[in-house]
Structures are given as C-alpha cells and as structure tokens.
Length: 77
Image 1 (cartoon, rainbow, N blue to C red):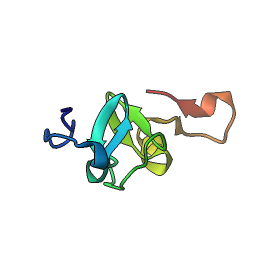
Image 2 (image 1 turned 120 degrees about the horizontal axis):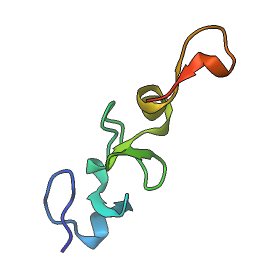
Image 3 (image 1 turned 180 degrees about the vertical axis):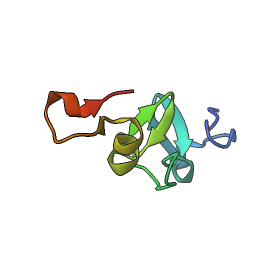
C-alpha cells in the first residue's frame, strides 16, 4: 500500500489522487504556501512540493520585476 507524502499514512484506492509521481489523499494535496486544495495535474511543483499555479508559484518562484519593462526589468532566481 503506498504512503501519502504529506501525512505518511496508507493511501487506499478509493481516496487516491496521483500527482508528482506519488499517491496522495485528496485533502493532503494542498498548496504549500496558501493551503488551497489542488487537483491532480492542475498545479506546479518546486522541490517536490505542490503549489497552486497562480498566484503562489508565480509570485514565489517567477520573475521579479523592477523598472519600466523591457528585457532588463526581470530577475530570475
């Protein structure tokens, strides 16, 4: 029986959501930043942790803006 990466309990077939190559309980698949419940495939990941695409992933790991636009107005981490 696979274990949920969030709570480490067994995941039964009826409650399983597969995402990031792992089996999760539906309520355990949440955004690491805001806690929003996510759907399988409807999110982004960073270092194996799920994040909602917008705004959490984009704001945390996307380009940081400054200036008035143009190629020099973004920095990446």
